[in-house]
Figure 1 (tube, rainbow, N blue to C red):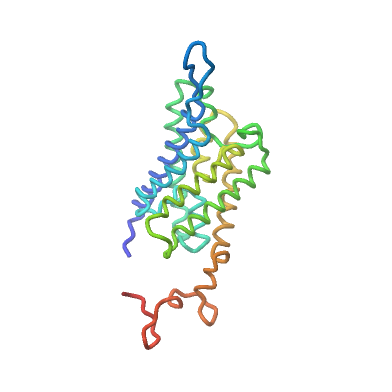
Figure 2 (tube, rainbow, N blue to C red):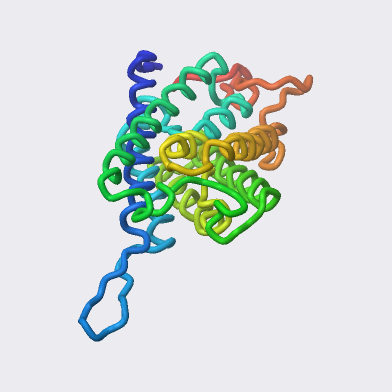
Length: 271
């Protein structure tokens, strides 16, 4: 089966992560809490997209970029997804570090671009540059423990959806939609708690540009999502029964064990 060269795959990952951070975090920065005075004698009217719109932005960006370049790189755009797929034996461990590097670089370029856009206005007019945080940096003041639990849990369920939607026997063409919807749903829960990371590259992308203490809290948004991804990757086959479905009589796993067989009992692998 044809596989694009590594440079193309890494370029697609960097591009997808750039677009994810630039559009979704940009929505949070510029359009989440816009307030206008409709009439001189009226109360301020919120016209921004709010948290609902931000969650939708993250999900829509992921879905559309998977359609755009998923055939090139797999459409991870997220270190947690890459690690979860590798743990589940669905991605080559030798490609993990290059993918993570491409995702972080793409995210940082987007974070720098966003910081440049808001520099003339000052960070006070655009919040905290959509950085993730706990304690005083949490949107609703949640502590470290709550943030770690929510980030790990939401990432685990997101990676479960990725693993399920991309199986060979899953309905074709719907994986990007399922993955995008799952990312949106996870943001509904996580935005009030941590400003929703579920993606270490996204957190890294804006942490160093937000002008506050985000870099000091960044470790939490690598540890928790990766823990969630490891849990999902390690347990998905057991939960879904895939580990038993592909077992040979002697207990070893094999693709041939699940193949169709001809009249003589030989496996039929090609049609």
